[in-house]
Length: 76
Length: 65
Image 1: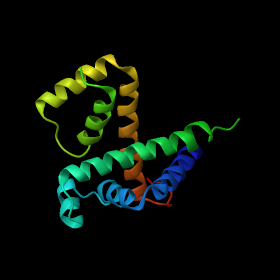
Image 2 (image 1 turned 90 degrees about the vertical axis):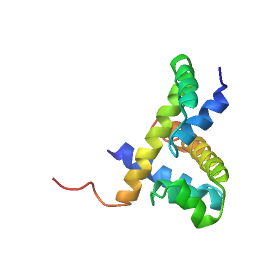
Image 3 (image 1 turned 180 degrees about the horizontal axis):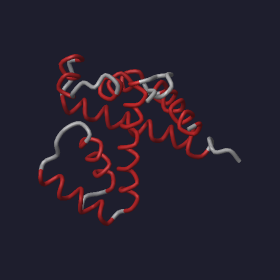
Image 4 (image 1 turned 180 degrees about the vertical axis):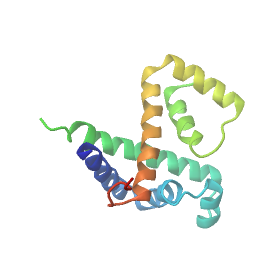
């Protein structure tokens, strides 16, 4: 449970550490729950661009989580 | 066979749009043979679930029964 809480904190921090535009698109998708079509309309970007940004956000988050949680976070 | 890089992109897009039959076919075939991409797909799903949890309750305790 504690482990999960720390994971969530790290996730939040990592999301905040993404480039602003990526974090914005990712948050609209995963937290607000907009569809990519809605995000495109909202931000005036193409679906392809939106997919690429979501992809980059996920890759960035994964990297950040790996660095800050999966390795560094374990009690030794 | 498609590359691991392409697979990672498809895994991500599968969270945002329905994949075509052809994409699904190549994705499944690759995931069946490639353990590390399988792990990657699991991580992406876990990340989505975690973001949902964040969205529901930033700091609150889990809902009481």
